Image (cartoon, rainbow, N blue to C red):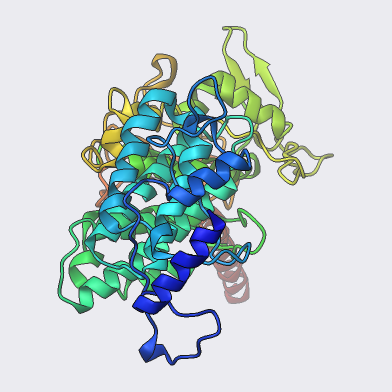
Length: 501
């Protein structure tokens, strides 16, 4: 077949469909490659991989090592990885690429499941994207295929995150590359005044896939007005803002915001909200551990370790864990002590010990700098519940993108619980607690002797409870200054009265 291939190459050169290897032409005279392969896998590759025993089990005739010509799919191969010259018969045109994608999503995944088929589908979707790139094809067919591939990778990244052998880093790399290609396609379509109905959806995914990038908001401002103001893009920007509200860097290189309010509770409440779709929650899933780590670190620094302690069920409701067992596993990783109360409730020993005359303020142990990462876990309650009863193929095809179902509570504990932090807050704490019962926010108005003595209810635009401890150290300083001022004036009056006498 190689001798026939050389003759075929000469034929294509004579017809002007490709250039000779030693041809030197300007960019204006370059020849665009047009695919002519009408099968899911080129004939030469099928026989080559059968001979080299490079067939995937899903491409073989059952019980043999022979290729199944109806099920073989072109694999991903770098253009010049082995000196192999691509011919038009090696590249599939757009309508065949759409057919191949339908086969992968509606037949392979349906028959073999998401986990078993993931390595095969991942490689073959890369091959589909590569065929579009080789032909420099940037029309609606390429956009639709890339959108479906991006949704597939988002679903896989969330559902297979805890499976052995799965690489979240590699999956996120494919998500970002696919979304970057989509952004370029949308720009080209915009120049031709061709509307793309799903652009706002995928611009939002692009923002969420770069959630720790401080320049992503500035980049979003360059979008057209109707895209930037789309609720999905605004929701993504809000998630980016809430995730970056941290008093300590979540990872190396992240900027620290000392004035942050640490809106971790509002972050998870927003994920649980029915207006947050499954794909948005799935894309945020990989960031949960970073936000939770910052939340637990902040609690350990600002709370007092006094009765009643924080229960594991409350932490599960507050930070979106599946159950208290998962919370206990995470606290064990961070070396936070867990105790059982007389009532049989498990509580976390977070916060500082009360100060005494002979002891200094000292936070409990919180080891968040370990070299071994926390084992990733699926988010069944917060993310998986949004896709309950929905076919994966429907999500990938975009028929169920907007479905957002209510999030169940862990073990019957209502998500409307307020975190019991009053009377146990360290001076200078900056915390925001958000729940879902729609009551008015509570803001601390005054604090004395390390205890909260007065609350004031105020209305905000979010319509949820938020207990905010705004710069209590500043409030205490003002209070002390007022006492000092009052005593100073008293001394002045006494001295003036003595002088008059």
